[in-house]
Length: 513
Image 1 (cartoon, rainbow, N blue to C red):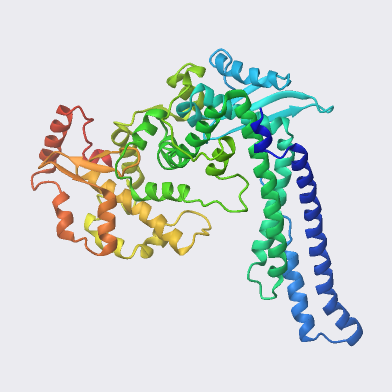
Image 2 (image 1 turned 45 degrees about the horizontal axis):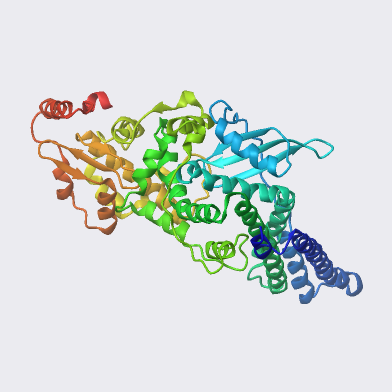
């Protein structure tokens, strides 16, 4: 393909830049070690030749020790091999055929294992024997890619990853990444030091980061070129645009909706929940902030990936990003249900029970929230709902009673957020105690509803916000009390109405406790 020459200056150029990165990395550490020796020599020389330590020696010694601390090696978490079985060839025969066909075109002959991952990304790694021959290819494909890309677009993503593989980026990339992190950590630790040590290393570090980032960006351009060579420019471009579009939404959905639901032991319909999550409407504050944060990244010269606009323009000169309609290629694994079943193999099946988004709040969240406070000092039967007025005004006062077990390293804001999370669930528990049921919609704040004595709907988050601003009054909370009849009559009326509406009967306070 002619365009590939325009997109990438060539692998030889990338290798030359990588060699320069190595030289700069070595120079950085030689400079650092030389400076440490020079600084620590000053107090040593003063004590040896003058028999006294002067002010300049003290400053130099402290500066040298500060630099030693900043240069300390950081322990990295060891990456453990995944114990999850790869996708079954019987279920995903078409997907295996696609991957193996691309590998064959690149003259790679090795068994392929495909794994599903949760992120909107993909990877390829190779296991080699002692002779360097590839024993197997481990291919990771993001679950959202199957749910939003066409078959051609998914193929271009896989070809892109193979572009890194055949270009040697998989062996070069981790080294460049670790080197970048090492120097970046050193510069960060020296930032605003009292001895101006950060100035020299900051400029050197920026020079290094700028050059190493350019190596990574050229690798991306070259991989895009290979994807376009096999699956066409249109499919490669639309795949880039779609991944850029869905990644903030998917990562937020995974962190704030699907992940918490799975942590509660619920096996939820994944793609149905994501479709609901993406519907137009007001998202709750935490979700909206997470989406905004994910979308707010601005391109800089230190980025390891080119911006979407740069990659699109490299593929189609003069073109600007657009956002084509989403599609899906889950037929490659046997359909939506089979795809979700394959992904849920990542989890302990004995800890998950099937659930759905319509009844998740009432059948899963509600019993767990009730159980969380039952028998504690915050049990709704013991702690009056009106206490929320004062507790919300000064949430920090509740930290000592609500802090997690063990040593806490939370900041003051982190402590406040921890208390507020518990208070919001306690509000829900109090409302459950008063006959309300939870309705949870992906992306939105949970709402609570009851039909008697009159239809009412309220959001625990709104009550908490009223308390934080001082506008919540005890008289306002009184409207959520049960009617002034006997508890048994009130609960019987609620149970009858709930059963008629097809809902699970509410528990009485005695059985709830």
